Amino acid sequence: MSVGTLAERFGLATHVLRHWESTGLLTPARDAIGHRRYGPDELVRTAMILQAKEAGLALEEIRAMMTAADVRRRDEVLSARRAALRATIAKAQAQLELIEGALDCDHDDIVACPHFQRVISLRTGESHREPERRPT
Image (cartoon, rainbow, N blue to C red):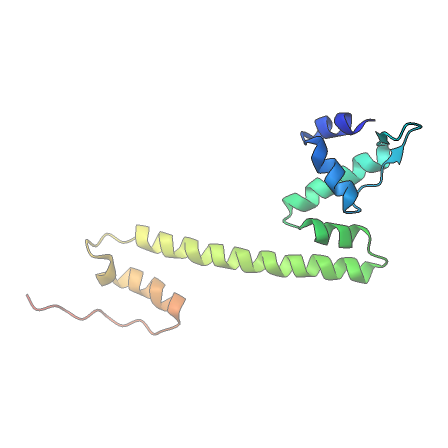
């Protein structure tokens, strides 16, 4: 199939496939006049590249993974991405807990809310202490 046909099949611009070729991710055959011809292997590789991108891998990581000479090298690439993804998830979870803690507060002054202060103390690693009472 042509570059246009493959690009259309995945909803991509043709320059994306050409870029992937320039980085070594795709290696289409050429016809007699030099036009790219993509076969079943390139179709599968394109789908794999898109899946890997959806998993958060950069093109360099995808290339390293797809061209790895052995399983260890591929596992190194994937293990590094997994660690980065877990760090991102942990950060997002902490953000969510902070927001949920604030939403659970029914105090006018969120800083004076004991529940929210517990959430903050968990985040900062400091012991929770009751707020100082202001003289009335």
